[in-house]
Image 1: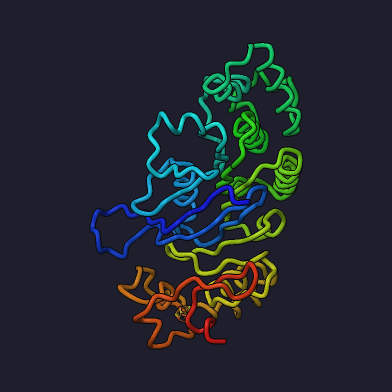
Image 2 (image 1 turned 90 degrees about the vertical axis):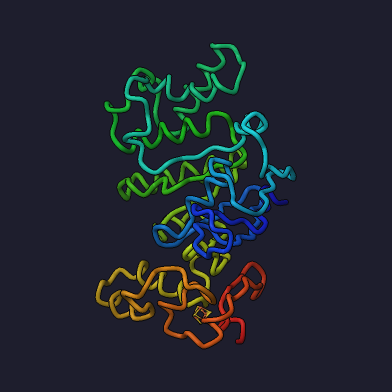
Length: 314
Ligand code: SF4
């Protein structure tokens, strides 16, 4: 069953109706209930913008967003308030995310005070339980953000996002700024909470090792477009961009990595081409059709989708 249906969604920040310069371009996607959907791609590929549109923190320029079978695209602030507690976001880094005058208790209780009418004692009990779930204890209740390490603040950020028991959580580079050991602990925590409460996550990251650990399916974005959807990151990928992205990231030996990088045309123009495939300026396999026709995102087999003329033909 789908939690989200995203239909023909665009986001543009210039108001030119016919411009091809979009932050997000014609996205069609579904997110199933209970899955962890990864979104990968370079900085500026539109992954965070897409996450924010799903939470209605940004308004799409065009297209529809269906959440739990309700079309929320044009929902007002008041209408969103009724469902807002069911969708939350864990942000990248937390150094500046918290009010420096708030204690941990105040930080975590903020969403409860906004959306829940439960008695004070019940709220306090929930906060302590959630702190314990994220590996902290009640001695942290009176601490301020600046009195904790980056990892502890990240855990408080997770506790705040999950305190309302949301159905859907956008994790935007949620483990990018923390060390390896803590990253593994937090990924395990997110997995445990998902199994315990059935949360659905959109896991936005440029860290493919973390994506490999936690995600059920992975969407690859390039310049605002989905270029490939794969069942998992170790899948036999076909799109030239995905191949280059994986080759540049997952190979521990830097010499090997450099050799693999020839899969990309380095230093080429990163502007969105006026027509055709968005990756044509960097692709080593560009054909004449790639310059004129934008490849559609087509099913290859099962959960594998790809947008590439070359790959469609074999
Ligand atoms: Fe390369 Fe053409 Fe495929 Fe785009 S459509 S990735 S330019 S081969």
